[in-house]
Length: 469
Image (tube, rainbow, N blue to C red):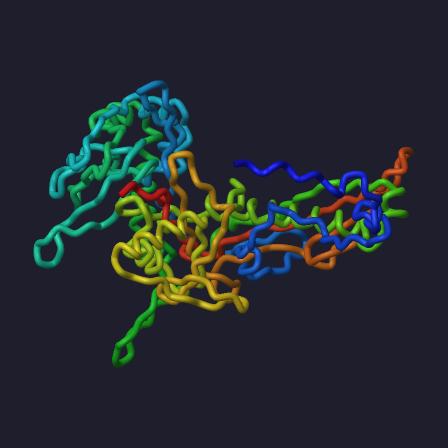
């Protein structure tokens, strides 16, 4: 049997104490400073050694190096058809610097599109080099016999790479390795016969190729720099070699870039609403945080000085299987002396952790600025969300040596600028308009330089999404 509802005895009762809504009128609310979700750790800005750049330009002088084509080839796609951009053929070692567009277009038109299934052989060791192979899409591994006859991998090429550049020389020789498709590959092949047909009608092309061959025959060290003649281990009174150290005639110069914005604050807000927090100060703080985030993004992605775009082709390698493995990280680490840090998107770090877990390995730990961070072989792995992740789920991992004294990667800025608010950043009063709005110009000046090519390495085509179990 249900109980009868009890009447609400508080209904109509007079209020006995002060209500919360009224009491809040006499209280002081405890507040935080304005919060911002777009902040990151900005490890790159913290780790880069900053070099003072007076005059706004930084020149990197180097020993003379004989360039033999160290770029990548770019393609355009029309449906299923892929074509090479004619000017990009200038990235081939012996066509480097050749700028006759009509001749390059004729060579590009003679490239044949070929499709290879995973495991298919593209070129065979010991056979005559009779094709230039331009990799439009996919991964190709280079294989050669080891000391005891076993098959060893000598490298991996991916989109934009090429094989057989010596096809256009007078004596192309034979393949020193076997090239095999690791994935489905789209390749453009330029037959030697097609090249000879074009070269037979263009004396300038033949002269250029012969000159490039002569350049490659000059004495050089393993880094491609002009050799310094020395003698050692001699006895008696032999004639010692004379030498000099040659420099690049047109060294690269980096001009400081700028990120700017105009901050506007109404004078009424600036005058009246400053307790307990200064409104202009908080507006400036958040604006500067946004500029610093943009600065780090530019240092990574800017097409002129960004680190991803300035890594030398010889210092780029592709993952062997997709996700970043300990083997990939070891190979990236071995490409330079004194690596001080890895930088990777957090998803790439997570992907590397998964690969370590599969092998029963654990991250090392390093302390950087008082913070414990994951490390590999004692080198800290620092998160950098500015490194992009493509729609296909691939990213990159940077490895770098740091500091001017170590011939590494450095950040560039100029301090002591007018109205400086932070190092390399100033806030300049621009006046008050007729609507009583105060304007401030907020600017930060920066760039980055890679002093020698092996200071910066990139592990490319890093798959960051896990595979379903």
